[in-house]
Length: 160
Image (cartoon, rainbow, N blue to C red; front, side, top):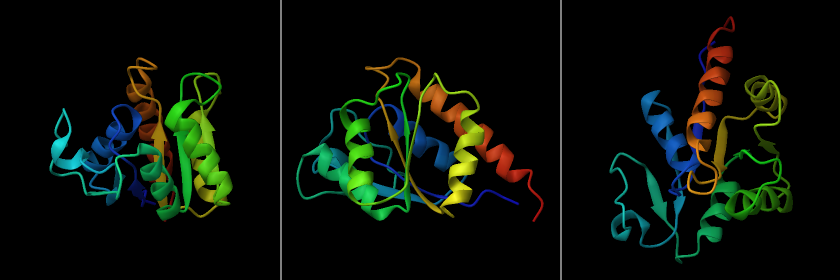
């Protein structure tokens, strides 16, 4: 059974940009919210292939809340066991909105299997993917993409 997900994410450098690139690589539909001014006025321009919408304010936390709202569930990647910054905001926003949330970190074994179980348990098709920035946790993007690839591989190997 082919993996069929819609990826919802923002434009923060790190896990969010990596999730966008991963979605493009696999031609998954994607979208999400980013802070006002980020699409055209950011220091590092966004890839025009990213299907993002600008929020009404420059507040990144507003964009995180909108992405949680528009998804069925949220997946948060960090290297540390405790989420911080926008990753923590995503966790708390999902809980506040009563949406399923899975926070995975480097200390957890079988992350890709846990992701698949989470997707199955909540019948997730619109997944908000977020997490740390590489500046805060070097290597987080590569690790997140690797785990997404493994989860996709598990889903793709399932019989229809």
